[in-house]
Amino acid sequence: MKIDFSDCFFVGKNDIEASTKITEAYFKELEAPKKDLFLFENSGH
View (tube, rainbow, N blue to C red):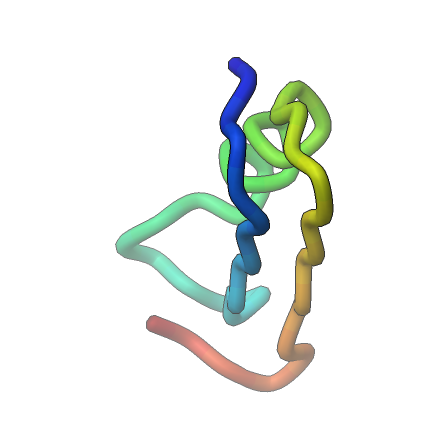
């Protein structure tokens, strides 16, 4: 997927609502001018 704007993801590693693996896979495939993925070690949703 390609977008024309910057995007940031803030994800808790213990999130049971939104899978971290799915978010990481989506982030890897995303094409954006600037993108960041922030993983919080001791956090859920």
